Length: 220
Image (cartoon, rainbow, N blue to C red; front, top):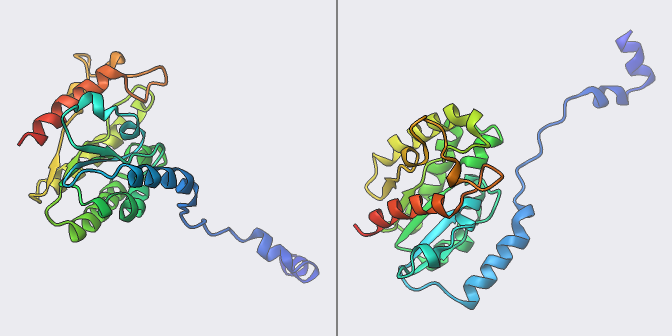
């Protein structure tokens, strides 16, 4: 019967064949990346400054308020995954040769079903790109934060964080800045005061936790 149907309608075979997944596209970021590039060209970062790179938790960080005396620049873009940050690093990070990169991404990756092993592989690729071009640059890795909105993913986040922490421990230019314990209350749950209404992005109090931990690492 199937053979008869194919003879009568040969396109049926193609209609039933599963479609290959579309290749990862970075074009959706172009408008935002172009805007960041324009900002950087208009006000170039100081020599050997600190680059804050990653997703919306970086983009929304008021660096002037948190680090008033620090030569820093922000190239975060909301919704990004580690792969996105790596793809645009040659345009947003490498040209300015920062002495340190404060990195936060992986949160959206897990939310989009990237496995802990893939998160590690993606960060390894980011590190390889940076370290090859800028061997003296340090990377401070902020692990995936526990949040109210994505609490159901916490176990996966913990596994991903553990893998990246072990990787960072093998390299002198990498440092894992463990913000997770400071973001959990005595009940072991995310502290509500650290989050805005969406349960994902952080309040000023949440950033105060990150700022204190990062400032300590930058002072060393």
